[in-house]
Length: 280
Length: 132
Image (cartoon, rainbow over all chains, first blue to last red):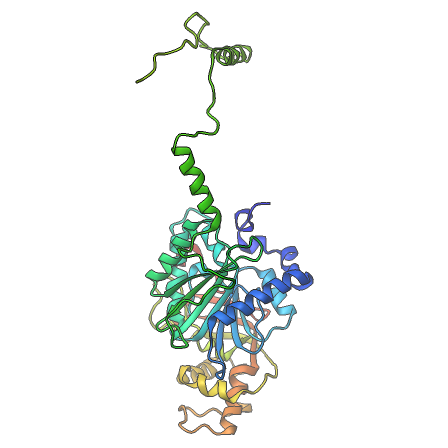
């Protein structure tokens, strides 16, 4: 199965069946809850102060906070309504930007949403991923209080995507970077984009550490490294499979084309597929 | 489920609509009251963020339903008070967090863009030519 964001736009992909998983499927709920919990931990809110949060993509359910949620999928909003969550909900395309007044929120979290911004649905200039990301990050930056944090869990499919997202976030004025939890595990591995407005809250500008041992230094996805290694091997001369084009193969192909009725297939001669001089 | 606390933060985000785009005006609203947990510390920390005039104004300008609730059941002073006593905070809590707009329209005072509210969820989607 290919990645969800390549199958359909979010408001269609998260139809009734997918949205139902968020109420019926306990495993799904557990994963969502764990990631929400971890995101809140990374948000590093002051413990004694009640906070007003923005939840981007209402897959999550924060207990004990006063919050506002946005989602583009009506079915997901219905699910949120069914669960009788406490916060306000908006039907909104985050790629179109927010209209919240400056400094409205004490923090923002989002669970597996950012990757949805990386696909263009139409050819209109406002539909291009960089434009949508830019609009999203600039309006979000202004909607957050200074200092505060925004934490996004997302599923990047390549290093380039991380690059694109972080560079646009930086242009919008955010500090911070990528935190990778369990970088060595295929299943438990989770990527969090941890962005700071101003000082970042909690008096520290430092990016929090990923769980389980070392952080990936350059924020690269593991399999990207392997692919690079393979590529290097190829360049060093050991090509794995070069097609051997010999006389028999050429004759067979030409015969095939003649059978199919293709015109202007050259006739066979003693020169067909002859060995050529080495080029150097 | 649009509470007045969120309405007080919401400005129009259509293309080129950057001034006089707040507050969005309510029209044809239906209201529901839902009790919420009273949290005085939150209200106190949230007070500086409120646009007081907008809160009272939107209450006044909005349809009779809203103003009846705000001006009838509770009384918010026209000016933001310096001293926060228990009674005032309870009123503020009621106005901000317990009044839910279920149906209606929010209209931008500048570009007249309509944001319809249905089932308590406002539709903030923009058409392609309105995206900034």
